[in-house]
Length: 103
Image (cartoon, rainbow, N blue to C red; front, side, top):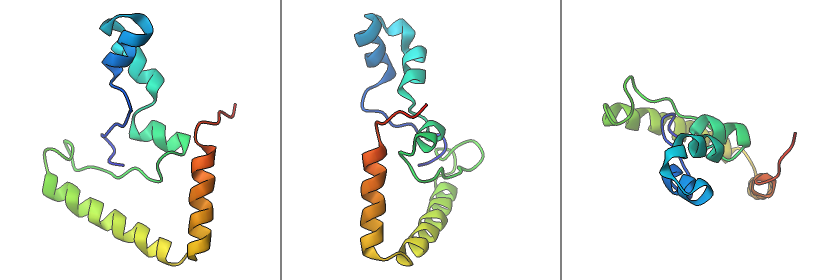
């Protein structure tokens, strides 16, 4: 996931509206949703955070594409070394862990 991207099934404003009946707590909702690349890496939802060019990917899309190509190529090379059965097993384990809180 690109370092400045965020992923969520609901916008923070909508989450705030549902939980607190107001858009005013959208920042609190965004924090609770854990939608940043760093949050998702920590939670094990994504495998890697891809660095963006200075100023963000939107300022240098060609540079961002080059970095993404390098990262994807590296990841694919590593995956090619793992037997398919092991890949499936690891992927299942990853998805089974999602949603489980460990304190």
